[in-house]
Image (cartoon, rainbow over all chains, first blue to last red; front, side):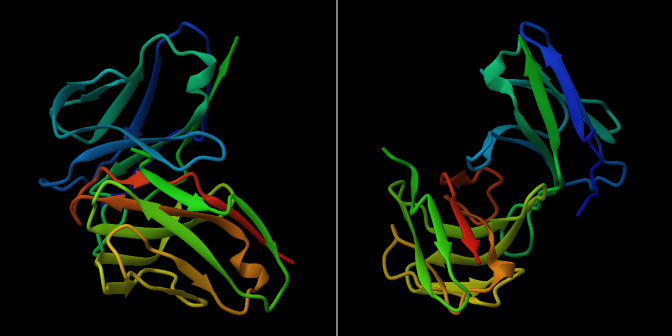
Length: 111
Length: 113
């Protein structure tokens, strides 16, 4: 399983674009990159997944450079409700199909 | 479509007591999981199930038991509660075992004193 490194915390203001970068230098050829969001007192929620280049959905964009050694989750025009912990998972499935979470990035959005 | 539901939301147990955490999903998913999350940490797998009647241990199964008599329900039993079991417990389900998209319940916050 590829080890991931994310910032422990980030601060932003409402209306700004937020980019959270995840480093995964030893990503394997068949690994996907997946991001989860967890609000306080809630279970994690799948946000987006990608393999290479760029993926966009109604919530976020995921940018993956050609070497795939890092990825960036982009949240456009954040609001207070985007305050949460964001987890980057790379090849993040254990042998039982479980998700392997790190400590994540705590994003705080201020008014 | 309620997704994954868990009861209770909060519970305080005394050392040595037992309880069952309930988990139900209405998405007809075959795969279900129980995780625990300690403060400031990621999730650790306790038990999982690949279908009714089939369960198996995860990373941290000691002190817990599960059963899966129906596709919808996957209760987690704590026997002889210990302070080390103070945690937030999440139930999740997925359509496929190798799915990165798992659906989580709201969690049960358990304190053992």
